[in-house]
Structure formats: structure tokens, C-alpha cells
Image 1 (cartoon, rainbow, N blue to C red):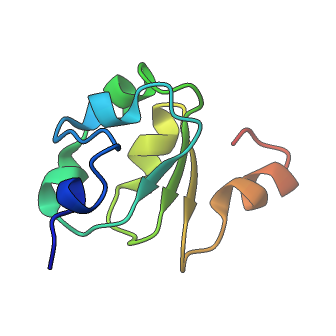
Image 2: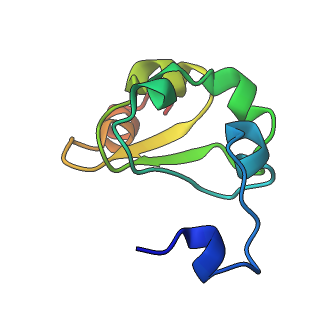
Length: 91
């Protein structure tokens, strides 16, 4: 199996999460690696264009991300922001 950097050398690669997320309109969380569960959501919100997160693995602490100002959508979980909005609260 070829490394992605070999298969697609024109793409930019980094191991630094904030660098990878700079000016992002959407952050996709696609792994269960434990180090990603320790990301500071407030710190990451400072570098993205839009604090919008899709947690496809359900491995992040959704309340912490919401408290840091993120709109969070987690696959396989009810959309809590829609439920809060329906009750008249903030998301």
C-alpha cells in the first residue's frame, strides 16, 4: 500500500491538528485514536473559519465541544442541537 503523500504529492500534509484545521468550514472527526479525544475544542475554534464538527466515530465529548461554541453533529446519535432549538433554547 502506498503512503498518501506518495500517491498524492500535490496535497499538503501535517500531523499538527490546528494547522490541518486552519480556516476550515467543517471539521471531520473520522478516527477513534485517543489523542484526538484530547483536543482542546476552544483552542481549535480559534483557528477554524466555522466551528462546525461532524463526529463520525462518536469519540468526542459532545458537551465540551458545544460549550466551546461548536455546532456538533455526531453520526448515530440524536441531533441534540435540533432538540434544543425545538424547545426554544440555544444550540
